[in-house]
Image 1 (cartoon, rainbow, N blue to C red):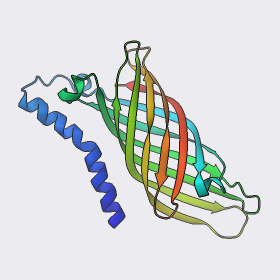
Image 2 (image 1 turned 90 degrees about the vertical axis):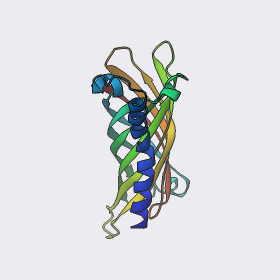
Image 3 (image 1 turned 135 degrees about the vertical axis):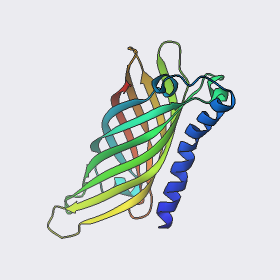
Image 4 (image 1 turned 180 degrees about the horizontal axis):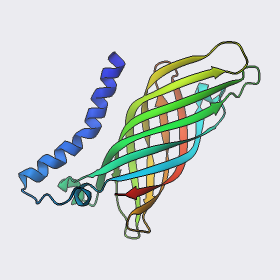
Length: 203
């Protein structure tokens, strides 16, 4: 229960800028405009590799996975005046990892559900580098394929820190490169590097 409360508080803090953006515009009496114009919502798909590190890296091989995400732009004038763009959203993914140890044949599946905030700086030629931080939880399941009956599952608090690069050659299409570091706490207590490519569609 304590872990769930911590996740809820951090997710609230990551989503709070959305409320601040609305309040700021109300105070300045800005015209509402359409939702798409104001918040620039987008949805997207990512696919890539996950590399276990530390103790987990000694027993698990790199794995392949993917994720779907959706986010919106947060119109905060004090950031926009500096040329910065803040986006906030949620991603849900799946990664499958195999065992490095031949004496213990196992398969690990990880389903991270993460709320994130992304602070970017658009460049003139369409590239937007950004810093990203996310927090949520991951459902982790281990399947013992050796017949030993050592299956297990857990739900672990998850922190993600990384960089993202978006390139928009078309008005509504973006190509994405995400890289970073994920930390799982509690049962798994593992560290992972990830690298993924994908695309997003602006609604």
